[in-house]
Amino acid sequence: EKLVRSEGIRFEAYSPLGKGRIGLLEDPVLTSIAIAKNKPVAAVILRWLLQRGITPIPLSRNEKRIRENLNVFDFALTENEMWAIAKLDRGQFVIMDDEKLA
Image (cartoon, rainbow, N blue to C red; front, side):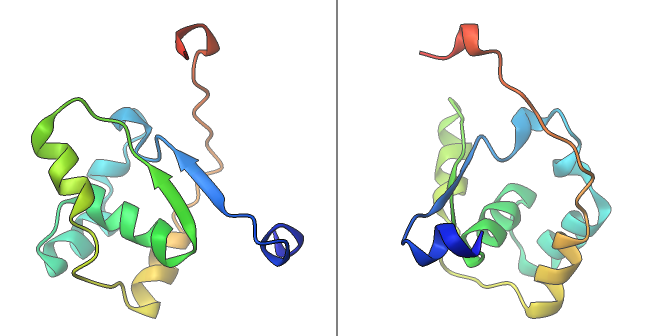
């Protein structure tokens, strides 16, 4: 990670919400942070990525969700919230079906 960042390369998170398949949107830690921030859980996840210097590319066809996904610049996560989210790593990876990618 240090080498990549030292070269000015940014990490990208493609479909970081996992299309809702991995339970992130219902996670109790994320839900409690979202309630405290008065934001959707998806916005908390996207903000966490942005604060880590990762460019999120969320997928949605729903206009309301697209607008919510853009509304992540009017709040910040505390250091404790960032750490609490980082500890959620479940070691899961969601692999997209490359047949469906353009």
